[in-house]
Image 1 (cartoon, rainbow, N blue to C red):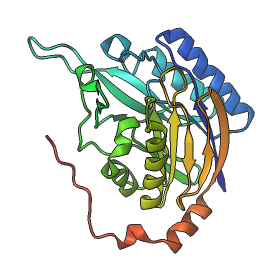
Image 2: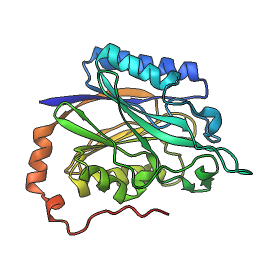
Image 3: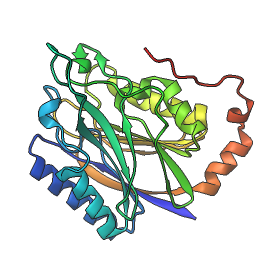
Length: 272
């Protein structure tokens, strides 16, 4: 039995109402092709290429996640989407920060989990930690069962840290979902593709990177199978594509290449 997944490589702005319409249109498109799961990029609720922070944050009971849950229930389609949540109350003299998160909502509209980004993008001339606070490194991985497959999430810069994906596969994930707003630049598209392939091969899992389209972003949503074969790769333009994932095919690769069973190390979170 296959699980049908729609990858929505969309443009997101700081117009929250417009973004909610983009999501509604993506749900309608996914419903037309009979999808079981819709995947949206990082910061799907609101995005500004100059930086995302408290001005973009909404609580989990705010309009965006509430709308996601309603659309999921209406169409009977699960969804994974990047959002920005309010952070903790700042200490005296410190600026407030938000939280870069990913929500997983099942096909009944129930909130299945919230992942808070652990590795903040303080690299390539950017300091995400000025605006965002990191999620707890020891939080339970977020997974959601859709059909015969278990989907687990990390987001964007987390992809560069193999331990993040390994914790998700240890929690039972067959498919790694990586919502991203992957910045463009020299070598960045190569890094994106290579890292997705590495995470797929080393964990014998499907890896799906869901890129945001738009100025200054790489786009290039990509699906890599557990054997390292690229099954889907988009360009920079906004577009939706649908794929069928086969649990039996995944199991056959893991039987042939039992690297997860053969490994000698475990991943232990190291709080700072």
